[in-house]
Image 1: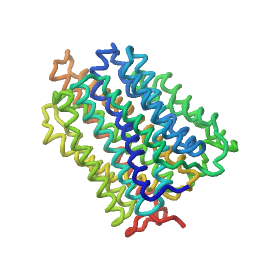
Image 2: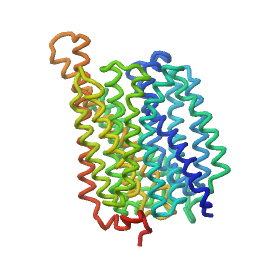
Image 3: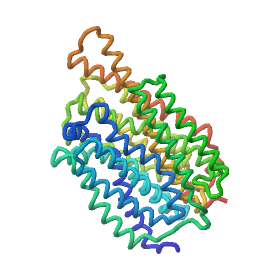
Length: 484
């Protein structure tokens, strides 16, 4: 049953609030890591898993969440995921050991993996292709991209004003209220004749993605050419190959591989993997730079990223106008080029830098470019998809974003660490504080440059692989209209 006209925008608000909570939590811990390390006695090597356990479970279970939304019901899965996320947030705040926090962060990631694809598929089935969906996805794009920046701001405020536990406790009332209102106001929908629930396929793809991401993340400590890294990567790839084999022979597959014949979907998800790597790098390395090099306290560091949120929001708004003027393909390319210019600007940050002159211009360019990238690329990835595959398409889109971000950040962190180590080793003596800072900046510069290259390659691939006729159903005057 289609939702009433006056309920559509209420539905959009509810799913965006929950999605904002999920996206925000992916970055909110970055500024609180030092406090968490001290409170729960994390080793430096294990501290990364406060972030990685969330990302791995989130990225690994997104496809399962999308398929479950299509089969069980999008509203049911959305509410279940919201409640799991809220419960895990409470457990995180009550954690008394590093092992507990890592485990509960993983549970949070599982909840997020149910919420995100269900939320996006609710939007795409609530709003028909046309101007309204364009507007709704504009709001969604701003939430998805801007939530990361707000996470850094809120993380600083909560950590310095209260304690690190509150970065998790704040999710509990939001999640509960969102679930209650969603149960009353969102209309249930699911795919007709969706088929069986492919549990074996879900296990294979989740395990394959998790092992592959784990291999990249641990490559920094194991070494890229070590047997452990190569063995883990080979194991992850093998599981994904087995997954493809199983999906081709399963009556009710988790992923109908034919969906990748939709050229717009396949290209958009491939490009998003690269773009997400650059976006994750922005928040991670810029946060380290303002705290460790510029010496900002948590709240000041969070405020330093407020312009990023404004820039993404403004970029998302202008994207809705540009889509009508130049089309989704051109708008996406322009957005990525602007974001790449911002990252190249950041690649020149000095050890004695200034926030206003050395960091802010690059942040604003990157933010505006990302706002002009996420809206059209979301449209490209979800257009021409049948309603029965809305959850699957949403799961693929979110998986590309999370796995791409995790892979990109792991690779760029390794490159940055290698550059820092090489710089310090070349000094020939025990480095002092200023020299250690200079070594860190050398690593940050390499990371920002590499991130810019990732986004640039994404723009080139989109220009080459996506043809005009693949997005010919975009009407410049009226927005999206149904494909023929």
